[in-house]
Image (cartoon, rainbow, N blue to C red; front, side):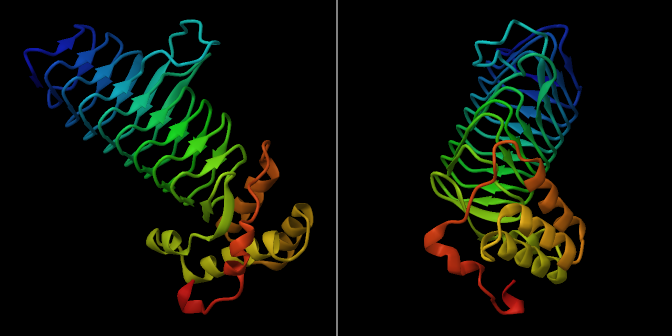
Length: 272
């Protein structure tokens, strides 16, 4: 174990003997830090916070402190961070309100100045560029990528493998496998490149594109489009995921970005 002489680590903290704690870091009594994780200078970690293996937490990050929530009543909540997570400078991740944990999945990459509020849940492999803000209870699906300065209302859901452009803002849910842009956020098309990079087959990508054509370009209402998707499109797990996402939305799902509606028209199969 390497702990810098200026770091302040509570003796009750559970720090793996192959972890590293940098100068002036502050580690609270209910913190657990896994093997191979490095904690940078001036990092503060408190609450019932568990950090997995081989994580890298850079200077000035703040993890597990009280949430910015007037409903918080000093409950013994915390943060759970998976393995191989990179947290860059001055990221803030607050512990949950009520009960439970704020959760960050394996292999996430959170760039500088991101804010993850209480009770948020990030899936695996999420990439967040600089200065995004997640309000409380936001859920981000696996392998979603977001550019900088996006903002999210409380309880918003973002589906799996979505791609968000910079400065996107939303009060609505953002669907899986889609590219999203604007304020208010709107669907621009299918995240074909992201799907391909994550090993989704051409057949599935084609079906996803057809599902979104029915949802946004057919003139059907959402209920009618979902029924057509179930009746006419091969029911791959990804197609069922789209249908389930729309049917379980409590905030409504973002609409189509009107000026670029033509991007959902037919394209050559080798471009999908």
